[in-house]
Length: 171
Image (cartoon, rainbow, N blue to C red; front, side, top):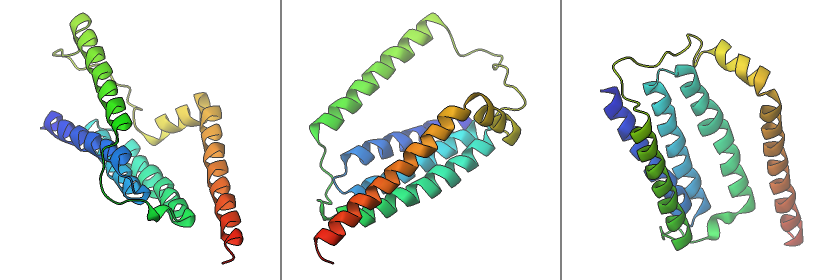
């Protein structure tokens, strides 16, 4: 049952990811990205990483996407077309990614069989709060802080751009 649910959630994530780059309306793209992030959280649940699933929903689908939607609303990008038009470059890029992923999967499966009777050993701390905290605040502390700083700079930059345009238009 779990492999089937994982495959369904992977298909939903894939369709939502393609919709994210296919929508011309940035707000609809953001909502498609939210669907994709929820599907990824469901995939984490099927992998028994419940903490990671909860963090995926709270941090990405919740807080980060609220900031994205806020910035989109602040910049008033809703004037773009709302119809779903498949632009050629994103579609070609998606097809190229799928081709490379297919070739990679074929190579891995032909050289190193992944399906065995014995599942691989997973540490007891996998997906738990202490396990994630140990990695995030230990080995990956610098990249974590740099991403936080990058997101802060992006939001502040969007507010500055919107504020300049707001004052220039005399509102």
